[in-house]
Image 1: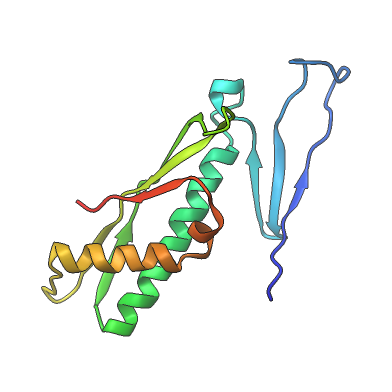
Image 2: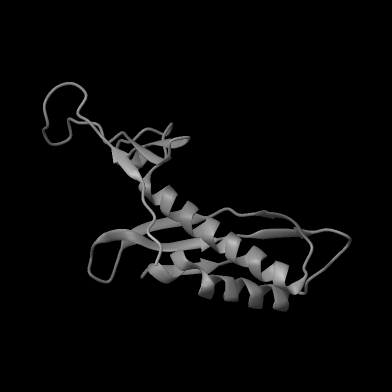
Length: 149
């Protein structure tokens, strides 16, 4: 079993802790060389200059899905040249009436080298397989959609 960790650091800047009067800005440390500034989403008074938890959740899922897809593609000998995604997290109320990320849509775009081509039906099968094998997707209870164009 693997254990993966991050460090999260927040501190009260000025003033005192009272409702709506403090900043949610914090730092997430992945490694000594990889740190990101995080905050609440702009809709909740966070800064657009920082990432937010909803974005990092979508990024985690997108990254995991891509790595799983690439592993499958490599096993099949597919000459992948590039992979791009636009992951979209949708907030709403879940079945318990709580605000949550109710859906994440992945929009992978795969390019191949040497004129290699994969039929849309085959691509959809492998993308579905990548979704089923992705650790992060298997950890979520919300709906996850992989959109193939």
